[in-house]
Amino acid sequence: MFETKEVLKDLIRIPSFVDEAHDERGVIEYVENFIKANTKYNYVVQDVEGERKNILVYNKPNPKIALFGHMDTVLPKVETDRPFEPREEGDKLFGLGAVDMKSGLAIMLKLMTEIQNDELAFVFSVDEEYDFKGALKLKEISDFKPEFIVNVEPTDGKILNGCRGITEFGFEVHGKSAHAGRKEFGVNAIEKAVELIQKFQKRCSELDLGDGGKTTVNLAYIQGGVLKDNGDGSSEVSGLGNIVPNYAKVVCEIRIANQDINQEFVKEEVIKISEEIGVTVSNLNFKFYLGSMLTEKIDLKDLEKAIRDTGEEVVYADISLAGYYEVQMLQDNWGCKSVVFGVSPINLSHSANEYLLLSTLEKVENILRNFIEGCTSVNA
Image (cartoon, rainbow, N blue to C red; front, side):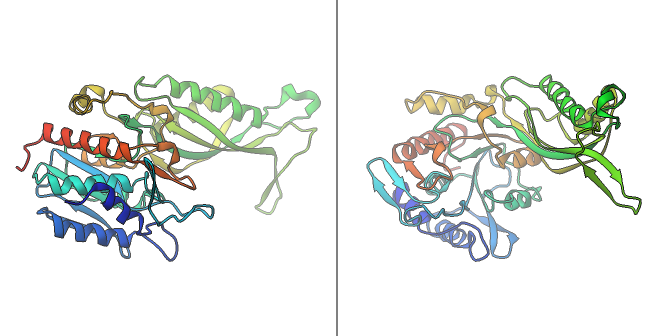
């Protein structure tokens, strides 16, 4: 019987970063061959882009548990030492993707050989580190609906039971010009833009859910001045110090802790606040919108038990310190519960000399094995 560590080393040796000349196809081929040679599971591939494919492994389309992971890595950095040559130094295993997240893939493949179970499924995606093309494609699948997803991303052995959503949007603020010496007769669009965002942050914070983290609004970009009509259909912004600016352009990012903070909410609140403070807004547009995710702790008692049964302490990660996880799209689309749980050290994800703590590989594998066996009929 092969070791999980050896499967991980195989995966590290296969480049799966994405650029004009590279992608995940080597890992895709490895996973397919592994399934055929070592398991009795059925699987389907879903075309994403060119030779890039998602892989869904299941015998029944409504499993109780699905383990989920992505096959791509970030680009290798110039200072990375031998990114595709796995090497051990004590408890550390170095290599690109060792912790994020080929360790999770190795655990998934190992458990796939041990637990032949119609109530268990495995989902492998592409492009997580880039544009979420794999997860977006998975959203098109409507006849696969697991009850619970474990995203085996690194979490330092902590339970991450949610993530904040993220959206970037921009708009323009219009005030009123006046001579700077008689400022009270004007409406400073730059100052009002800052006031608007501060009030908007307060409105968002009122919707925070406690365990779901805190919504934060980042004023990422602001440019303003006097907007002048050139008379030929064009306009320009000048920065004259003796005139109250009548124009500001704003770009903001929101880290969303409550699904109620959707695009419609943002539009309505920005317009409402602008009216309250005496300005108008125009050209409000969204670059993208990805929602938030939260699974209540009451729904995670089986996972907590599996952790305790292996002699480990149950610790929850702080959602406000976590980034966005693409499993949110799947939870939202498939109507299931989900959690992120995996190895250490998460702080070395995407770093130049990334490594995995091998002791955590075994711990996470044992915990997930206990969790699956406790929730499903083994060898069903």
